[in-house]
Image (cartoon, rainbow, N blue to C red; front, side, top):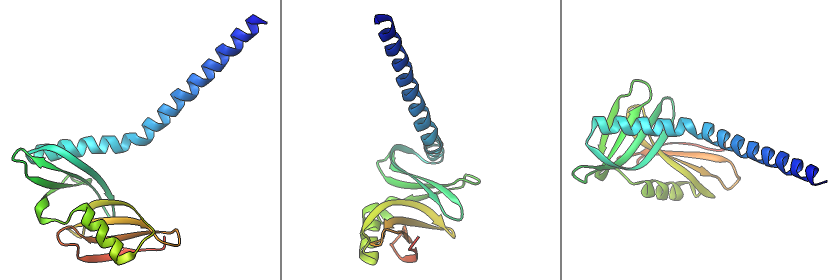
Amino acid sequence: MKKMKKWFVLILTIIMATIVVGAATIYYQGNHPMSKAKSEAIEIAKSETDLKEVDNFYWYNGKETYFTVTGKTNKNKAIIVIIAKKGGKTTVIDADKAISEGQARSMTREAKNPEKILESRIGMDKKVPIWEVAYQEKNGRLGYHVITLEDGEYIRDIGNI
């Protein structure tokens, strides 16, 4: 009887260990593209500017994909570095000449009156730096409010998705 109990505990331990390792592997593989893109974008931003401190990372998928890193330079100046996935072209913007993420979210709340703001990201649309704010509509559907990064001028809405 004791021998059977030991085998049961051993088999249960092996099963639990397999589940934990499997879950960790799935989690890692699911997040690997994001963490790899983030580290590569930070590396490019640091090589193209004097960025010393990173505040945020954004991944924008529009007609083209862009990675954005925000942070401070060696002179403590806030900058936004937008990097095209294709070709790696960088656009550097003085953050003081752009609206903040909080302002972009507030403008979306005022314009769309959504149930909930889901996330915001910086990207480029026809060579114009933008904020894309994703939100949940009152009917539960997804919507996007796109405004210019510089002054929050309306570009377009995509709704009822």
